[in-house]
Image 1 (cartoon, rainbow, N blue to C red):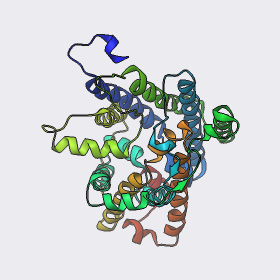
Image 2 (image 1 turned 120 degrees about the vertical axis):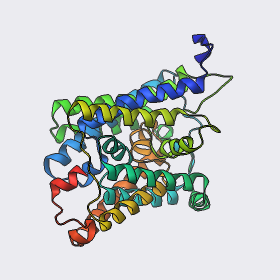
Image 3 (image 1 turned 90 degrees about the vertical axis):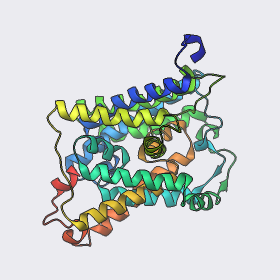
Image 4 (image 1 turned 45 degrees about the vertical axis):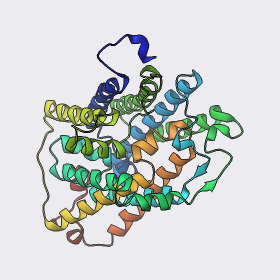
Length: 360
């Protein structure tokens, strides 16, 4: 469709960068305002956990509805997408998910949350995302790539990795997922403003799929079918940042830049921009380790809480469900394990109150 626009000085890949930036800008603003965070929805406490769960659940429900509506309308085709592969790399999904979940607890935030925090002045988050990017790139194309391939070779063959191929089809299975997500959102009694923010975040997922898979589709200069995700885009952005004269920016590069810009502007306008850093060497070690685990885990699992979860599950791919469950399981186990370790040994801080932990 892109060629019908008649652009003379802008190719589809170049337009994808700008589209990613706009999508990221919207996500950055909405995520900063709503404190959008999967970790808090899993291991948070009290009202904070309820708000996080409800916001995340409504986002997932809207993402599923919008994505499947796009599929039904013929705007998007996930036929060859890796998340719907019939040979499901179960070992890689589970190992990667658990590693990511553990790292998410150690760093007190997943990749998307840490990007938003980093843009809001949190130097810890920025350093963690630097480590995350380096390790993710190593797992994609560097020294950890053989480990990724080895884990991915252990697959479980199925008739289809797509829930839509099961009896009942997309309407039944997509409907069940939507109803479950809506029940979580309603039962947690989330504030209307957070529900609206969550719904808008969820709407960005199908917007991304349609934008890259239909609007920007060009037979002569094709681009990848993408939407919100952070593992590969962060790694690609790091590589582009140090070798931009040799490689071109992609959709993911624009996405990361947009998220940083949106969260920065939102926090600045709302007077929430605050510079914070590490409090001790022990805390530094904890965060660096967590960032490394998330970087490797995100690649092994085929995505983070956003890429495999919020964006992956709406495709009705089984892989996304397995990855998100593994991430949640890893986070729960890690959080309980840390409960047996003195707070000073874990963070190096004099005190570790629930409020401080929530602030990341």
